[in-house]
Image 1 (tube, rainbow, N blue to C red):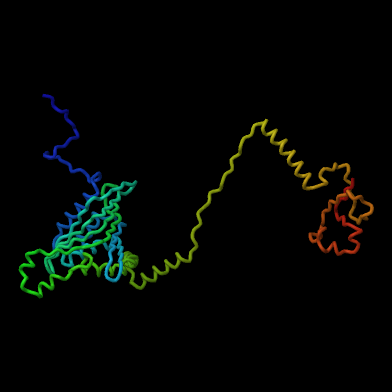
Image 2 (image 1 turned 45 degrees about the vertical axis):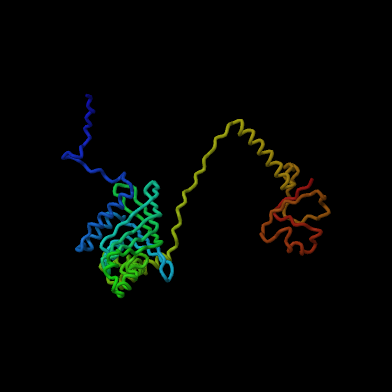
Length: 350
């Protein structure tokens, strides 16, 4: 009978040195299962510290929780930050709820570089109410979660879109009060609105005001300033951010690389460039093709037009910047048709 080789790193679950595996590679739904178990372990004596520890265990420091639903006066959407999430879960139980858990069916998971997204189109939030009467409420909707892909695997974004809800009353309670029309009328009324209690709805409305005030509260807690001073400081800093011009990104200087050229290619390119420059200069200046021996330099004076041929070219360097051959000042001068200026220049004749 052959025995399996002994693994030095194997630890039997029945041994004294059994180590529990870290929940890094577990399914994201298992985190919801752990959250349900933690909510079931809540007691009536659970204070704010217990709820803060609950939020710290399952939610990131910059997590957001969003609820979307439609009431009688139109669609609603509430988004709260990390500091207000513990109070949200506590208000659910303060409204008469004794048990709360979430059920995910046919959820889809997508893995990214630093996060895991869970999209569940058939999510149910089940709450058990003990007052004003014993009722079970099933709130159905779509739940979208984003977990951080690390050892803790905490929730970064929570978005629950409520579609419908059902309030279930046991038949035994209806049979007990079948002869009492007042109790039956009370049982026929809804105790929630879209599956949420009035305590939770009032808190979400209050969060619309509390969420923008988080900066004031944190400043008051950190610097121990009065509310008026905190408001002045926040407004002044916001005004500075609005007035200050946006910082321009620093541009790195572009370095030009020198390209090495072969001797043969450089010689051919230089000769071709000289030919191109020669042809270009011929088109630009007609007198450039003349040799230096044909250029005659004269002192500044006025040369009669009849003493020059029609093929003469004038190369004039004007000392005053306002004088120009095409300017109206020289054209209006007397004898312009007979005389041409030659100021500090050369008259070139062929």
